[in-house]
Image 1: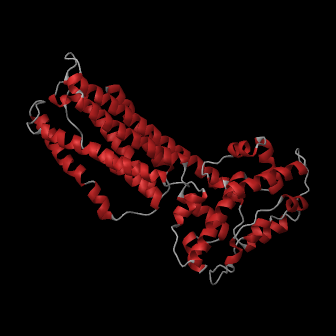
Image 2: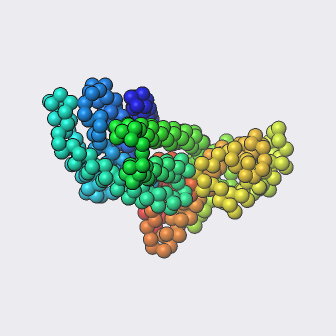
Length: 418
């Protein structure tokens, strides 16, 4: 058990380091919530290891539930809610979520002080504390676990890794509740040779193992987020931003004009307004149009590249493959049934675009269309939800790519385009 708690604490420390090194100057709230969750796991497992080593014979090993167990489920729900709503919750509501854990923390440290000053002996009221925290934790796991699962079902545009994380942790919580009920109902069925201390030991081993799994799952989500962010940032580096940039690009590349870029909304320098909202829709170039504008030879025949582009354009518009935030070049090649290197060559040499630039143009197009539709209906859309539904993986990548594409932030586009 000590090895499990030490390994889990070490893993949590590594994940905390990843969050600290790769977080933006102003990290998004969902990352901050995951950071707190990992910090709780680290504190929980480190505290358990220290107590086992410092007080190996203390009575607390027969039962001393930590107040940190009351933090896990509310943090999971906050994370799921943040991904769904994309906005901050009122501070008073967040405060109320953690009041039970705060009360339990006071009792926890009172008991800890008593144990230290009385040579490892535990106070009489520790049983009341253990029962209260234990039962309240089970209720919390059930309540927030179900709510988090329900939220995960309503996140069609969110990254699959985020969905999987919510579902994994919620299922683990529900499994802990089921295990507790089984042990409570069937405690009389165990052989007399198995003592309460043995059962408690195995419960702690299972609990620490699940915390280790949760920690690794959070690390996976963070690493994937870093990967996607860097890929999208690199892909967006060559994107034209405004009319002047576009004119410069056309002057330098007379033999290759991208019709899609001509459809981007222009911005007046003085008024900072969208000059024509009707042209915000991005029309992807057809294979025939591109064939006339691009005659450079490559290892792959132009006719074959035209067929590939026509096929991928059709699948993008009909199936909306771009709404999958985990869509990759490999997966797209499998879906349209062409070799990966043929697809990559067609995008890079025939369209002059990287894979992520090509996909994100479709995503921006859908976001702009939703904004225009909301504007016509005199409604204010949840921009982040619209971005997630269009296939963007994170708020930061969406904001960055939207501004590079339109010259405005999403909120400014809504305001100035009215």
